[in-house]
Length: 99
Image (cartoon, rainbow, N blue to C red):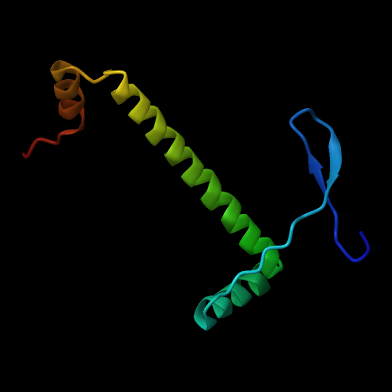
């Protein structure tokens, strides 16, 4: 793999191994590219590092949301709904009373 940077990654099993990152090309408008350049300079990180970090966080957040939605849909398909008293209890917990 001449010319490609390798990254050392720590696995869940507690072992180090080498990772060969895949290349992803992205088109950015000039304004966003300029902001990314400024952030890269200020943090002394590469644009690639910052973009990969942003994508990692986006995927983690959205994966969690999709999983929770799928769990909720499965519960609904099984007919597992909150009772009226459970809904009222939660609503009361989050309702602010005017003074």
